[in-house]
Image 1: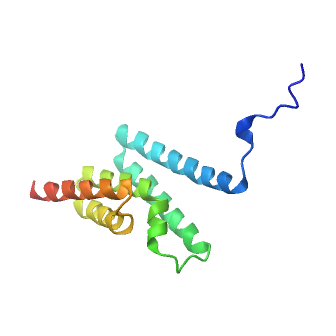
Image 2: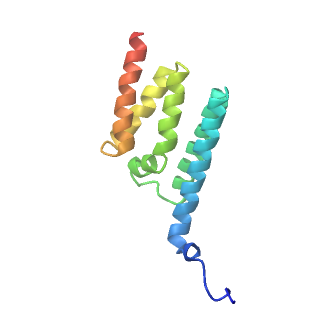
Image 3: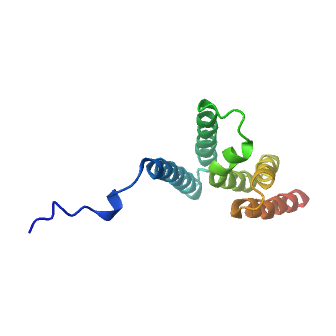
Length: 131
């Protein structure tokens, strides 16, 4: 029985999807790390992890010469991180920081699921203010 000639179907991926998969998996890792940190009582470390990931993505975006590209592309690429970061800020009673993040998501990606969720989170920020 020779199995060397049969290739695994999942191994055949193009370069572009590889790049997307790498970005997706790094996002997944960052989100998982932040969640685990927050869940285990280290919310400030979780915020640090997310802020670091966001600034790294912004830096990469500008490094590729996309300085004239709209910020919406940038926001779309890191909307998951921003959403979790905003939620963490809100849970830490850092309502101003949370509100600015949700405002950015509402402005840049309004019709996306993340944008709609950000609108709801913005309402929570307002409710948090009124105490």
